[in-house]
Amino acid sequence: MKKLISLITLCAAFVMSASAQPITEKFARFLTIPNSYVCYRTAGKIKIDGKLNEKSWQKAEEIKAFVDISGEGFPKPRYATMAKMLWDDDYLYVGAELSDPHVWADIKNHDEIVYYNNDFEIFIDPDGDAHNYFEIEVNAIGTIFDLAIEKPYRSFTPTFVQFQWDCPGLKVKTQVHGTLNNPKDQDEGWTVEFAIPRKAIAQSFDNYLQAGNYIRLGFSRVEWQFDLDGTKYSRKKESNGKYLPEDNWTWGPTGMVAMHMPERWGFVYLSGNKVGTKKEKFEYPVDFEAERLLWAMFYAQEEQYSKHGRYFGRLEDFGLTSKEMTMLPAGAKISVEAISHYYEITITKADGKQIYIDQDGYLRRR
Image 1 (cartoon, rainbow, N blue to C red):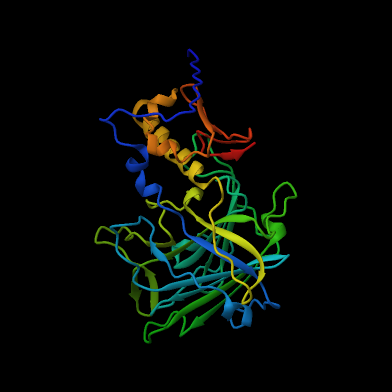
Image 2: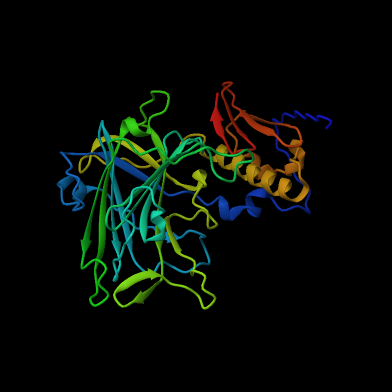
């Protein structure tokens, strides 16, 4: 196959033809602003018992912005979900309360497919590169499914999933507010509390639990409609015997039924202040808009490849508008280097530092 490499650098605004739709509009569902959270340090010890009754938890800010994973135009969740976070030198703490009139669970073995029960899920990308992230799921009886993932399943090249990764030192406890697996009464719901060790989510000996750092983090709640066989709960089936699809309620939408889109997870800023003391205003990272532009171009490349079996090789193929070019930092240049099956899109800032993305959605800096 003949290799085609195109390298084009743009300093001034690049104006697209009037007939084409801007890519930030075309892929707007996947470019909504991710949610944000300022995570404060604990003000005392946290006992992992599923009760969330320490003063630190009481002072922590609540997250209630759970929506259907697909976003605008889809039904609001039937039941309320609340989450909150804290941190210290050793752990990232997550607490969640899930309202549910029927609390049931029957999966008891570690690393079984926990989301075949109603569950609560945490996705953690420690450095925000959309690769090398972690997933931890738990049901109402505390059964855990945890894994480490090299890159999202959508990647052009196959991903490596470490099912054998058992988050070392993880502490998880649940509390049921009602009667588990009893359809004769109405429950309030259930609570779960996590202590995720710093060392368990470290890479290359890096410590991501430091004041001033951002972590990309997603929450997902899986909720199934159910059938009853006497007093036994099970996932509800259609008349053809197939299971009804689950509801996916997330902290902010991804834009489609796909949780493995790390770029769509929330931004968690680690504050050096203790919870309940001085508050900090959240601000998105300085290169946030430039990274949004790279993701818009990534989605355009995904569509181009699915239709034509090759990627765009020239910058002008994207039809960037002058408005889209303002998403770049002042004095920055953007370039595309590609062959039919691989590419790299690079933003070079005025200070020479670069942000770039490739066909696997690997967002890096150099």
